[in-house]
Length: 259
Image (cartoon, rainbow, N blue to C red; front, side, top):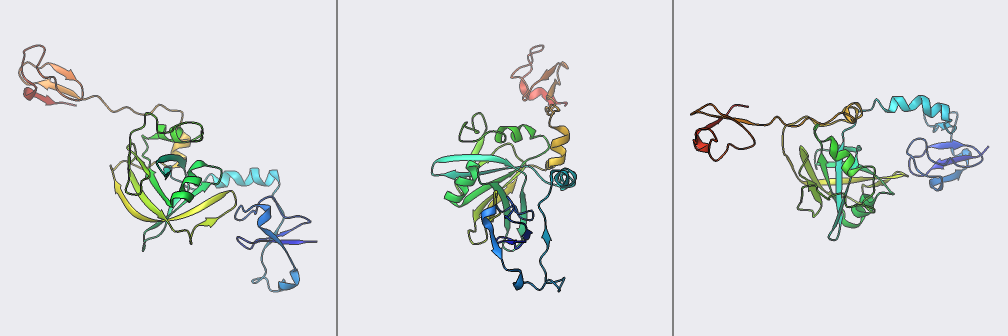
């Protein structure tokens, strides 16, 4: 029987051929090399690398619900290529070190955002709140190669030149550390040093579990403001009081916010 070692994470596979993907890190078959098991002291259980067979469909169906229990956030990760910008929905973002401040984002190699990050060496992370569910669909499901994802979306350009959407609760701007960035097969794990960021409001961040439970529910709309004329009691609905009261003619300064 042949043994194959994943050159990314060291996993050992037993079989005539390497697996399509490493079950530990996801690296593709070409990342495996044939090994001489004489190099391994299999009598030493602590030193011996684990040997497993490729998962069956039944195995995968059993394990997948356990993976759904892992807690994720939902983020919009953006980058640039010259004067072009793109962004995508992402659920793999986490802080890896505090000194220096570094975060990791996992981006599929087939995505345009992956190409832009590799070319520019920068990326932004916009942290979504629970009321920002429409941004998940705006920046997910379709490729930036096919559509302009920023059409009708308010955004600004950060110090890195990468985009920051207005509808988020916080954002980070990062510079890629290429020496720490890892190829994990289907995805690239970009390690970025945080060079800018801010909290925009104190709303609750959206988790992937929250999104799955609420994605088909309509988003809450802010309650309309109501203004009362202190002279005659007339109620006006709107973001601002009227210039004059339509009932008594009192100026806007005579209105008070009641809701």
